[in-house]
Length: 245
Ligand code: F6R
Image 1: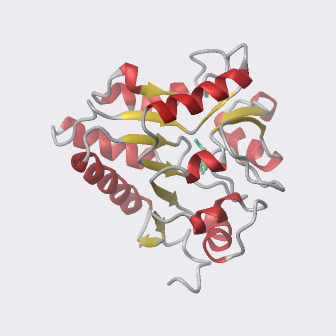
Image 2: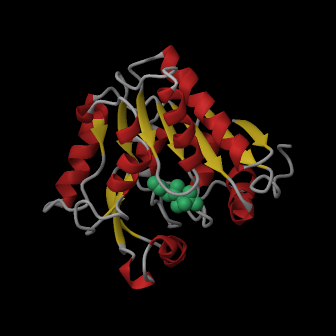
Image 3: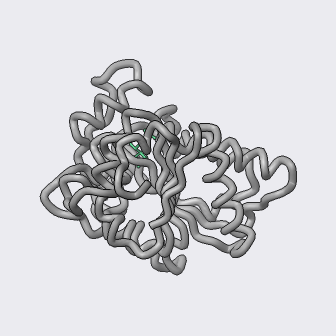
């Protein structure tokens, strides 16, 4: 595991974009796993800027989003599909047919999960998965539990996640209770992982995930078993690390 501690969010975002850009240049047909949330916004902004300056093309790239809320109407401004188009896809040259996001409005959600896993494997698997981290240690919407979910599945959001995500909604009652998420197995099958975290609110989860016991009670701790993980943190998120610094 390679851990990089940057000064602040701006530097973390620049380093994350540079990491991704290097891999896209090495393999223009790269298959990416992509997160939403506040953490990767700066990285997406940097990537859009690189694209506008004609320094980076996404024409050959295939993407799979990590997760999506269940039950938000199509086009809802809080859906992860909307987020991805607004913050990234519509500003770069990625091809529409190479974009994959779980359908949280599918009439058969169980089948949607099976189909999503099949699409990932038909694409040859994911080369690079980028992850944010919940302050409870979740990755994707794999919440603290007594087991590690193997594949894409429907899951209930933790109360703390609902509260954390309420900041994007008019009221907490509007935050969906369910989502589709890749499983821990889906994440561990990705060839490389880039984990991003910034801010004091993530410091405890980062400390526990990188230095504590591997346990489904802190899902991100499983990344200790992955052979190719890069972690980019800002100083606040790294502030509870001891052994690795
Ligand atoms: C989002 C996702 C979540 C977030 C996590 C951190 O697609 O899968 O695991 O990465 O909740 O969210 P932020 O970045 O908003 O703190």
